[in-house]
Image (cartoon, rainbow, N blue to C red; front, side):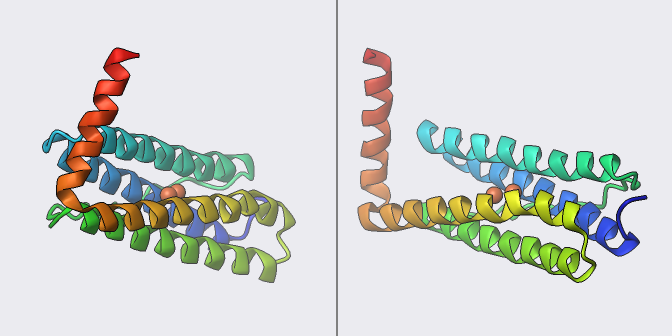
Length: 164
Ligand SMILES: [Fe+2]
Ligand SMILES: [Fe+2]
């Protein structure tokens, strides 16, 4: 096994965190789907797929270094979503949490002088910058336009697509 037990354990946990994010984004997508906001639903369904890909990266890394994969229990997503802005705030908080988790993994990899793990984790460090930035931007836009105008933006985008 070319990884320490502790780091392998943390990566197994991170598989769970990424899958948890995927489930949370799926839940949020259904919130928008149920409110006839397909563009926003699409965005969150796509986010969910991305999170599953992140989880798979951890799974394959563990296998590549000869560690065991043991998928942890994954908590149910938050079901109650008060409004659109809250869903983006929730997502932003989640992404900030994930960044902290990735940093903890990186700290550990550096402590152990596990250079392979550091190279692997670097991709996530960069990815999180993008994830946090895009959620921040969307939260800002949503807060400024308000729920009513959000609907107008959606129907406009849908019409645009249909006429294209
Ligand atoms: Fe992720
Ligand atoms: Fe993410």
